[in-house]
Amino acid sequence: MTFWDGFYSFGVKLLKIIYLNFLWLFFSAIGLFAFGLFPATIALFTITRQFLLDIDKPITRTFWEVYKNEWVRGNGYAVISYIIVLILAIDFYAIYMFDSLSILLIPTFIIAFIIFGTLFFFFPVYVHFDLAFLPMIKQAFLFTITSPFTVILNALSIVLIYGIFNIMPGAIPLFAGSVVSLFVMKFSLRSFKKIEQGKVSEAVTL
Image 1 (cartoon, rainbow, N blue to C red):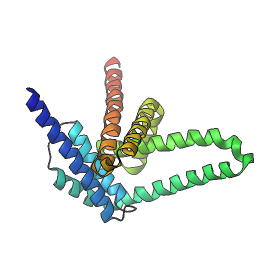
Image 2 (cartoon, rainbow, N blue to C red; image 1 turned 90 degrees about the vertical axis):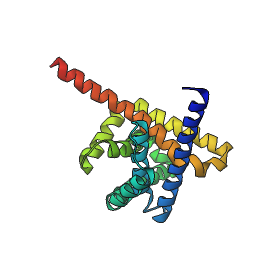
Image 3 (cartoon, rainbow, N blue to C red; image 1 turned 180 degrees about the vertical axis):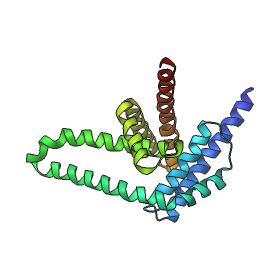
Image 4 (cartoon, rainbow, N blue to C red; image 1 turned 90 degrees about the horizontal axis):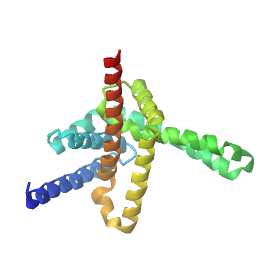
């Protein structure tokens, strides 16, 4: 591959990432964000997974089909997630307001790590595995427990991206969702591969 071939390939991928972010923002906005965010994010991670696995499918049509098909179920998961995050926020606020509850700070941080780790894995697990709700949540939870380093990498990636966006806020509408999904999905696929390889090795040993 020549330099110009590589440059062209990079440019095409960059344009796809920008376009994917536009779709994510647009379809999130259609649902007034509160009801469009989860279906749009499921579609976002579906396309991101296809990018990383070199699966070539039409971006717009695939995004729309996933968004439409996952509207009801995705919003059901959204409501559950919003409630959990709200309860966690209330817990932290109560600990902040009342010194007598400071003893609960560390346990609450541990619970928060597990909850947000599960949320990090939720979308990759959702689009990678064909699971019902409870098995899917269980799988995302187990990945959080068995792959805490991946959770930390995802968190650090988001912090890094947030720092870059603070310096260049104009990049937010171009890359905010798609770049985060690329990092989270890439790290998650590595964890999935390790688990799957471990199962294969165990089966061969048996």
